[in-house]
View 1: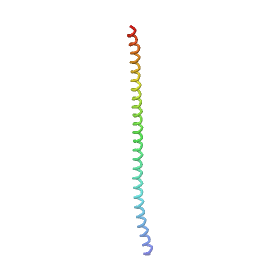
View 2: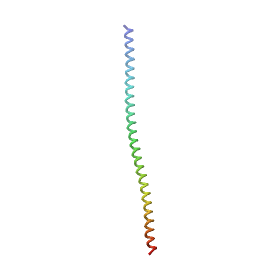
View 3: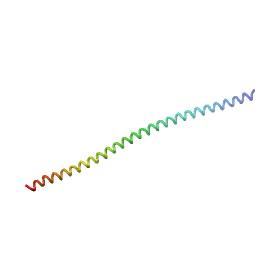
Length: 92
């Protein structure tokens, strides 16, 4: 009877250790899941920020080209005005 009782106590002790390890593993899993969720949220936020920055850069490039084209048009118009008005004054 004492041998059976000793075996039961040993198995009970081993079961307690395994239950404790299982609880620790479950907590580690929950922590890892929380970290993974935070990482996914951060990645989504960074992708959104990158997309917004890319759109801003595209807007800036478009604005730069618009200004460059506008200045070229100003130059062409001033040359045309000079040709037409300057030519009209020189014939008078």
